[in-house]
Length: 211
Image (tube, rainbow, N blue to C red):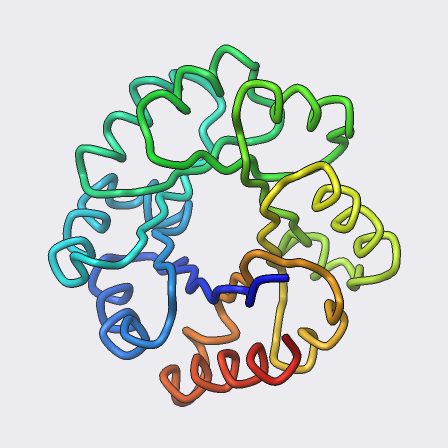
């Protein structure tokens, strides 16, 4: 079992705010995510800016692409992203087209996806998925539970690298002890902390303690 990485999700409403956050935590985290809202607000400019600041870091463009996979992936790659995301309801041709243009493609698991779909993703060479508790689900009262851990374990057994996200905090990480999680993704838990750098370091320390 490899040690999980830590990813910061920059879900800011503006590039300036994202840069303020990443300046504090960029040296601590392993992966820097330009979040969906930020991509919608400012396009690929945040990717370009963060790539200029962190030439050696893995940068993810969280586009949640549903169509035009080749074009979106090429735009992400040209801007400096290593990885990008597609939504799980995207067609196989869309995923295939995107996967040819970017270093790594992640499938975002929302809604009623199936393991039959996951098998098809694996068959076309996709190795990464993101298991979500969405912000809206968390606000409606849902919490992490055994049903989530069972699905994550099954995805791992299928050969996927599974990133986990959704309302994570340092205490939540204990739930995943013994599971081969590839990466923990934290957004507000780091970015909105009183001291974002310390919050990121606390996440890394807890990961080291558990795994």
